[in-house]
Length: 435
Ligand SMILES: Cc1cc2nc3c(=O)[nH]c(=O)nc-3n(C[C@H](O)[C@H](O)[C@H](O)COP(=O)(O)OP(=O)(O)OC[C@H]3O[C@@H](n4cnc5c(N)ncnc54)[C@H](O)[C@@H]3O)c2cc1C
Image (cartoon, rainbow, N blue to C red; front, top):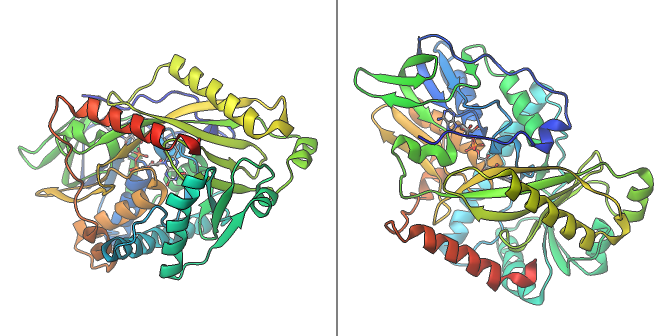
């Protein structure tokens, strides 16, 4: 069974005060609920179960430390307005569902951040969705613009100097600014969420689940103890196939990101532009997601590869870091000598049709998994809603999430790996002008 094996280089957790993790499970115990995986979905599911059923016990099991998985390694964009939406009525309908779900996720997170005073650089800075080439503008930005107009969503179209003045550099030809995206430090957010869980939730860290038995009720095995529970929720994202579910539905990708050292006041002046911004590229595979963080670092997220073994070597990470430095130097000639201070890898799980694995899997077993590259909102709302579903709580957002459908299965092995790699290579080639 594949278990999570994170590198220890996550920049987001290295630039904040260190957190003492909760103890591992070292005994057998019973609970009303067991949630497996304490990422964004698991943290939201456990909290919501506790809110729905204050008299019941919830055990949350995490293989690593909270904030060391993808939940704390992402680029920190909690995105509301969908981009890359098609123009059919069905796609627009789905876009409205995505929007309602994303906004509810942001509101749920915002409430925790405020109530528990979570210090995670939470800023409603919005984001720029930008393109380099004419084809990127015509095939991605203009359709997005049309969608935003049809949906009546606030936005600003920025070309040339108008965009460069905001960002401080000139690489992109045009962009669409939408104001609702929240930018944050994801590791700090997850630390705060974990440390403010309700009293009837017990979180065990460094506790990988190594098996689940359904013989006499649900029994979850870990290296040093078992949990017997009434109901089980899987929130393990791309590891769900290790438990026998969605075996032909997951596309695991390794994604690399780097943070530079902090810019000096002189370098900040040379760069100019806004002092905090976030930018998503017209093509997420080819292009670079970038941020200027409130503590004045530049984030580069670039380079995605199909990684079914869910691990990446130090050599591959070193190559990614070199690549990030080259891309940074090309885009920011005014920042000569600014180097990458942290480079890390995280794992994203896609499905073929972009739909999450949400719902009931078996009697008393539920899941919210496969949250694509937008899990800050999708996993949060998925976790919250799967708890409502399992508790029988009525919530109109359940219609939205269920209307998205089911993840589409991949074609049968043995060609699947070749097919996915070929498709990724095609994306890279077809959209190379967006690099
Ligand atoms: C570099 C990068 C940049 C990204 N940028 C963004 C972004 O800007 N915005 C955005 O919204 N999304 C972004 N994402 C995607 C986002 O991080 C994920 O979609 C999100 O983390 C999914 O949340 P989750 O809770 O479903 O899964 P995860 O965060 O992957 O959490 C699942 C947890 O389950 C645990 N687990 C797995 N197996 C077991 C087991 N056997 N026993 C116990 N625990 C187990 C894992 O350790 C993990 O902590 C990015 C991802 C990466 C890697």
